[in-house]
Amino acid sequence: MKILIKNALAVVEPSDTKDLFQVKNNSILIDGNIITKIGYNLEDEADEVIDATGKIVYPGLVNTHHHLMQAFARNIPKAQKLELFDWLYIVFDVLSKVDPDFLYHTMLVSGGELMRYGCTTLFDHQYSYPNGQSLELIDAQFDGAKELGIRYICGRGGITRGVNNGGSAPECIVETTEQFISNTQKIIEKYKDDNKFAMKGVAVAPCSPFTVTEDAMVESAKLARTYGVRLHTHLCETLDEERFCQEYYGMRPLAWAKKTGVIGSDTWYAHGIHFNDEELDLLAETKTGIAHCPISNMKLSSGICRVPEMLERGITVGLAVDGSASNDGSNMLEELRVSYLLHRLNSSAKAPTGQELLYIATMGGAKLLGIDSYTGSLESGKAADLFMVDVTKDADNVGAYDDPAAMLATVGYKKPVDLTMVNGRITVRDGHLVGFDERLMAQKADAYYKEMLKRA
Image 1: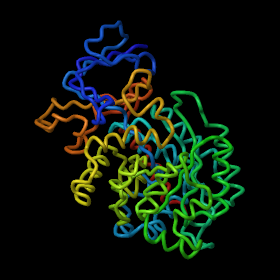
Image 2: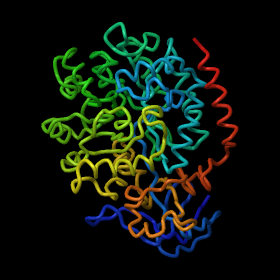
Image 3: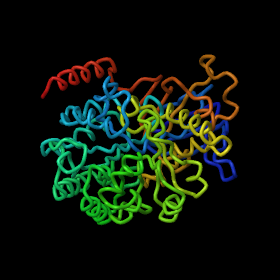
């Protein structure tokens, strides 16, 4: 099926100049799942013509770190003023009730929200496997992702250190290292997909320095490199984590990650806040990336990621919403603007520009996930992963789109997008999920949530 997007007010494409993007009044021709042409006044017989008059077309946003399951742990009153370690004790009480229906509903709820705000690729760090569950939980997530039409990469997380061993997680979700590695291997063998334009994938993702044992980290690195998949973990998120690592491992978090082998060009960390200069140099030297989660870091009072210094060193940075509870939402457009404002406050003229943040949220994220050869930018030969916003249908953006590539970060776009397309499939039209009764979806999720809370 051929789709022609024509008459766009602007198409935000990559640039070979010092600017990261070029903006043109172009049209886009899509054949199947692939962008075949971008140009002015394209004439081609298409099965569907989308009139993009008044609309700006952007590359799809790439979310590089999430915990979808936390949608059912949002806004808990007694957790609202806590920092990470104390907050986790509250949230784990809900996450210990995870089952396949739990993960299916939270995929639809949070994955759907992501797409309604322009996200086309989702990486989820799923680390809760109560009472021996594993593959059936991941199957439920992939089933939901397929229904939504979002590109989904699963981070098979794991917790091998519980409350009985100095950690914060309840023992019912703790695995042995052998169980974690064996279960992760099965998921890799089922869902790893090396095909170009793959809609699914897997990364090995031990949870964090304070929820896994050292042998689990070592074996994770070995497993990922045996199968040629990527590595991910939380690192340098809080000062409490730093103190934990000094007490249990006798070194700072990054030194410990390096010792275990969880570092390198196939690895990215969530948060990465409390690095010193020497550690930033090591990240650059090893080509290790960072998923920046500004809203979560603000909510939990964790700190501010040193993004300007990372960009100066050439470190690859992606954007992420983090947990649906540590963020209380799944909106990458909101994340873009908050990131811009946070760094302007903290770094003034050294803060990343709006264009730099759009790059971080698209190509930066695609590079972290190892999929930049086929997504992350609007180019011929890449997947048709994009979204459109109408800046002329109301007065919200009057005078604001002289620099469309920066606008999403500097001014923001505060409504659901007008269209999202993933791999050539239209998944959002006029701000709503295609093929879903959103009210019914919400009612079913809410009914499950209320019943789940009653369980011991």
